[in-house]
Image (cartoon, rainbow, N blue to C red):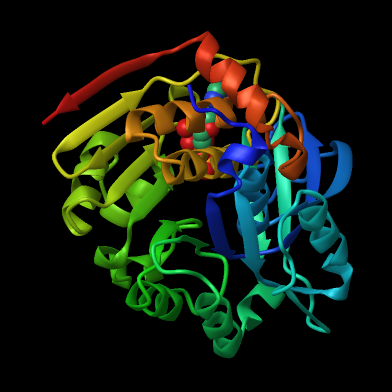
Length: 317
Ligand code: ADP
């Protein structure tokens, strides 16, 4: 088990360039179909965005996290949430642009549907990216997602500077196929994103296609919801069946998974153990409503990861 006290893992630095979103979450008995109106059971507003969520997730796992992003004035409470979680927010710009927002519907049982309006997140300037990357040391981790402008340019710049670039290729769209995936140190996708990137419905087949597209040694992870996750690194293949929990809301599960996996790997853990920690974090996030409120602390991950070790397969292909 990883020694996860803050003093130990604070040496792990994670840089994040990503989104800040106002999550407007409505709970519904079931998701509406096209053209249908349904009444919500409740409605709430949370700090969110994949970038912000993953920054908080890594910080709660004991990483030293700094973030670059852009929001509007109505999104300042997200910056406060990041600061409260210990994230270095000095590079985050605010503007008079409309703040990025996500409309999230969560059905009973945890199924969700999300619409994203990226808005301010599309206005990150290249100069800000250059300054942010210049302040990072070579070999440190830079974590990116697909909710902000300049993704390709950022990947190329950071990789050229020697940073280890991890991409959560989410949300998936056609632009991702043209990205230079061979520059990555790590690629993390869920099942839908894996399919969108590869046209393979079977996540194991998609994992093989993605593993063939990245550089040798690059980590590729496909998360499988309640069924855990699978991964490839070079010729090695890994699978962890996940943890059984009473899920109430799966928003933020992938973000919790990514923060925990990245801090574990940057702390020197192997991929099999890091997958277990990612799955434990994702499972814990499913037991709490909201995104940032659901991201678990390191000690809770320690307990779950140690309590039910379900690594079922670690093999060399
Ligand atoms: P995303 O949230 O990006 O769509 P997934 O749904 O694959 O990604 O969830 C990410 C991780 O969270 C999974 O790999 C798993 O470890 C955990 N997880 C998600 N949903 C559940 C669930 N219902 N029960 C237990 N673990 C879950």
